[in-house]
Amino acid sequence: MPYAPDPSLAAFIQSLPKTETHLHIEGALPLELLRRVAPDKFPDTTPPWWADDYRYADFPTFEKILIDHALLWFTSPERYHEAARVIFEGLAKQNVRYVETSFHLPVTQFIHADGEAIVEAIRTAAPEGMIVRVFVGMLRTDYTPELAPVIDRLGEWKHLAGVDLHGVETWALQPWTARVWRRIREAGKETKAHAGEFGGAANVREAVEVLGVHRVQHGVRSIEDPQVVELLRQNNITCDVCPISNVKLAVVPSMREHPIRQLFDAGIRCTVSTDDPFSFGNTLSEEYAALAMDLGFTRRELVRIARNGFEVALVDEATRAGFLDELARIEAALE
Image (cartoon, rainbow, N blue to C red; front, side, top):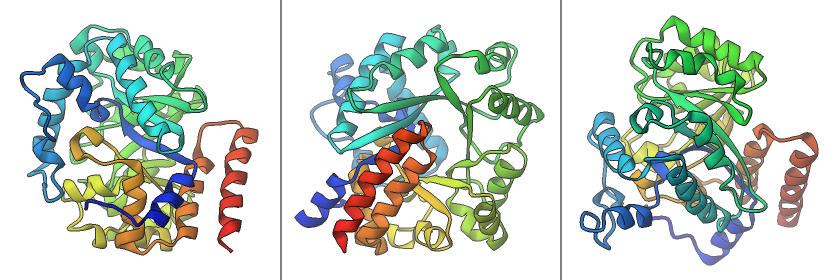
């Protein structure tokens, strides 16, 4: 890092219609908005954690920096809408056509806001031509007396796309989680879980076998257990991978050693996303460039990565076919 591809590769990456399927809305807070609300604290310099060689000491350090800054801005549904509008405009400039983003459910308690109002605030910020699906994320410990009634009604939220399990993977999975995840699917919504980032391959197996998810957020440590890799392959599980995040959080030693190469070669459907660009200073285009420049992904393989995102997108089949046809034309031109 940084990833500054040659003009030809940069133009090719730009030409690809892309998806962003692993994006925390609070972790994507535009720096310009933070400077607006607290100009004295944030001068016109880049944050130190954007430095190419910056590595977070541990997950709690990363989490504290992110939360301390995010809560300065995210104080109402209106603020979520404004941030989402800026975030989505930035993605649209990179030719991103489809976005799955999550907001963190406990924030509703901190700011005394209605969760459905936040879903609407984010969803309606999408620019013309972009499809946005909003998920709600929660920790393994969030089934509290205060939040349990909200969690139990998530299936009734009209425009909620689904749920995601956030936070520390090494905390034990509590019995309520599988029950809630099953009910969410019964309500016709999608379920995801963060696994295989700071937790090992066993956490990925747990997400698939206990929670029943087909969308694993990260999943890169699956590579530590060939049986788990085979589990992912046999069950057609998608790993929504965030390579630059994994490097900066020291989940992997370097980009050249990132296991997305091995997972992809093993036939695992992988997508690429930015995770928390406020924390890493990354763009989706740079994620694609990293695959090409450090991991030897060919242009045809970059098309495959883009296809993977649209294959799992929560869209009707006609819309999906349109995106896949566009990518097929780009791939055909490579011949």
